[in-house]
Image (tube, rainbow, N blue to C red):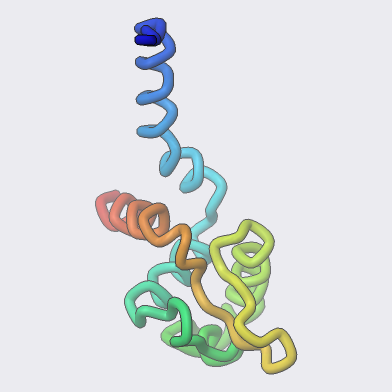
Length: 111
């Protein structure tokens, strides 16, 4: 049996998919985007994990460590960063959100 979708629903579904990265980027501040850029450029996914402090010290000025730490904690809550070993404070980017993270970074560079 052939099921025909309402054309308006199809348009809305494609609109929602296009705006997915825009909505995600609207919720990220400049420090969160910078942390994503640093971790993505170093391919910190999966077994390639880094300690919390290592990411904080990778290219950020010392007077901004507090903001970077809160950005990392916020990204953990939002699901962009996962714990690899919580006891060791090792973190990694969420592999399932690779495409979304890549889109966010490309859009932030284009600004």
